[in-house]
Length: 334
Ligand SMILES: C[S@@+](CC[C@H](N)C(=O)[O-])C[C@H]1O[C@@H](n2cnc3c(N)ncnc32)[C@H](O)[C@@H]1O
Image (cartoon, rainbow, N blue to C red; front, side, top):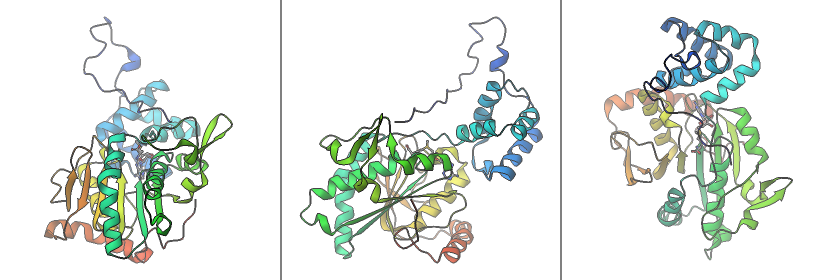
């Protein structure tokens, strides 16, 4: 299990009451907004990470952590450091994309999926005479989330009389290639399961760690993709995009929700992180199913003019470039 979020909450004035002088190591990074923009432009030009997607306060906090760690005071000095130190670049990108996660993160959400969502999903599939369940884990980090889904589905389906007739396809995407490499390896120092699940069915010992079983890994395909640049999938039954949305500005979040809507089939489910919510869910084309667990359903088609104008170009672009293929039909690699 990866370490939980290392981010420290900002506490205004923290330290002032404890020390008579400000701690230079804790000082805010210095530099004009232009210098800050130059730094972001360099990150985009050289590493393809479009920092405009993220909230400036979040970026400043994360970059500030790296600047303090490298004893760099000004944004321009830190830019020079990045140019000559690839290891520091990697550490910054790791920090910016906070790739931390765990198996069955927020177990109550997975319990809700097992108890309420999967039965409804299968009922829908049976009515449509479809036996393939398609799920997208968007922002999958090191793979614990899509493997948890695979385990959840295996466990759920194994209790059904028609278990052998079902196929599960989970597409897992992330921006960070190093996380994806770890995800493809599928070996973890520890794991957790939901009550009633048999560990020996889903994991086997390998060295000091635990490897996900072939059965678990078989359903999951990993791809590198930037959520901001990718075309939609089609006819997905469910999308998990957990603990990713919060790092984006509001208009980028709206674009992502458009992408998710376009990717889901009618009545498909969207699951966000526990600290995330769709503000004005109906306007975004979703209706809450279980509010506390942040589980939503794609609402009936409603085309609000402003919203449709905004979403159309990117979706058309996507449909054209990939021919609208979903995870089940697109060529995939693990
Ligand atoms: C906190 S982790 C969430 C992992 C998992 N979904 C969970 O809830 O445990 C956030 C992930 O989002 C990924 N991410 C950040 N920006 C992204 C982008 N623009 N496109 C794709 N993935 C992105 C990061 O690389 C990171 O792995």
